Image (cartoon, rainbow, N blue to C red; front, side, top):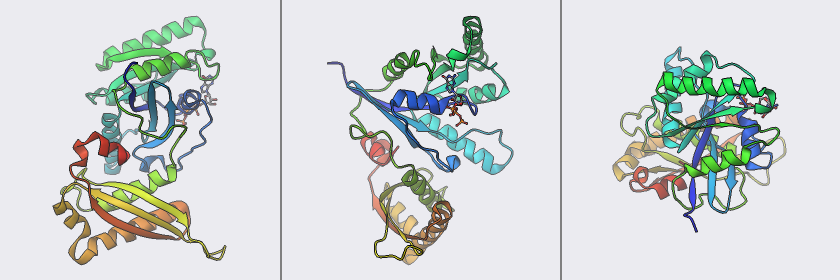
Length: 305
Ligand SMILES: Nc1nc2c(ncn2[C@@H]2O[C@H](COP(=O)(O)OP(=O)(O)OP(=O)(O)O)[C@@H](O)[C@H]2O)c(=O)[nH]1
């Protein structure tokens, strides 16, 4: 038996490149997720491909923009952090359209991300003639050379006709590290709202202390449900979440003097979540220590990274 493999891949590309359709084709069932706030999610799981030999988790990364503001730059940094954390980034280039400045921008930025395996996918091949497709593949190859990107594979695929979808799955799986399944069998996607809520809490917790604990906080939403016995016109959403830090000194920073900081984090995050979900929220936060979670792959995965 070959070793079981598991890991994360992310499809990127300009709008309409065919990323969602391809995700659905790979997962095999329609995963109806439209994250209304793509820029707040760090790793929203779009779909999970379960195989006998592997588990491939397809995650979203926020869109990359030409940075015009500091926030824009920060978001782009976040994109690159995510790109560095996944195993594979696959850039989608629709075969029925010429490669343009938008594609070039994405690939240029991706080239700066070291370790991650980069793949190119020529999508929508059913819309291109063989001649067009051949030129498209050459253009992708040339773009790789121009930007210093080494494409591990260049794969033509049609998500609509299903042509080469299986091959793409095989090639993606081949590049994953050995590892156990990370999600229960049969699970197609996790709850995107919980991912977003966790990210909002994390953002609030990092506010003002980014320098002291840059990446040391992970947030897991343990429970999220509407409180029973509430009148229909006055719902209340109960959210219980844990903030994980690596050391007790960090726990002190997060909690603050007599809990003042944690209360502020709770208030800030609650406002954001209420604005996002449109429901009053009762937010219960606990700070826990997960020793050196950033260096421990098992903990990382448990914490959703
Ligand atoms: N003919 C054909 N159409 C496709 C294929 N893949 C996607 N499309 C169509 O292209 C359009 C865009 O596809 P999406 O999958 O939504 O593209 P996306 O990259 O997720 O788009 P954004 O979410 O806007 O970034 C849709 O109308 C799809 O039906 C394909 O393989 N063949």
